[in-house]
Image (tube, rainbow, N blue to C red; front, side, top):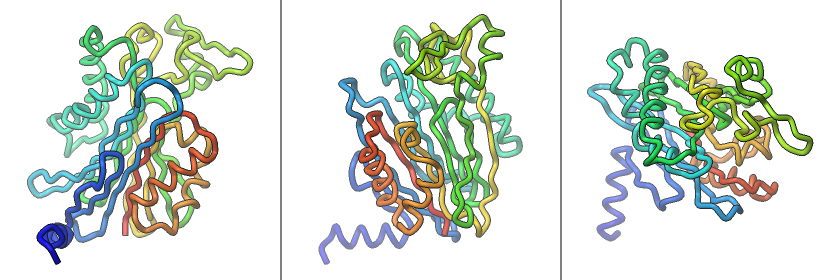
Length: 284
């Protein structure tokens, strides 16, 4: 066994593992309940640059361990999604009452981050990004928040349970119209805010912000023995696959990195043309 192999074995014993490549990764928790996570990204078939970004990491704070998982799906450029990747979780954890009032802390951090993005619109551009974030607190509680149509799904006793909310313009038409906007419904196209954006909530998008919201939906899930794994993915996956189909596809794949890769490859096989990013978190 050479030096690199010995070092890798030592890291595994300490419950750490480094991502094998820029577009795929896997890690392990230090908490006694065994939690592993992996991710995979695949660029879509459009000519524009990759617009998806993600976070998949474990972070220790004092005596607590947090799992930080997020999918950011940019549109009209990738600068906002990239900004979210670097700043959103830090902003959430800076809230003074994160440990005592987690949901309100996340909500405030979402709004504060959106305001920061709008203030830097000259630098970040006119685009925006959807987001779904999941914070695993000491492997006991999963707090999911989202704006837009990137989605979080858990598998519980073999059944898919969606924890996020797809913010479709048609579902929020009354709210958009009350702000002076409109929802287009052109045959052959999806409903769009002011005829432009196919989601009703997002970060950024300064030109549409009067009619858009960055208010997250938040759901808390207790991680008991019935919860097997979670999937976070951009709409490049969910456009071509139902929640239950995704769960069934990877339920027997124990390695989360392999599971994330399997989901993205299946989405591509089903003719998804969008960027696809996927995170799988296993609770064992």
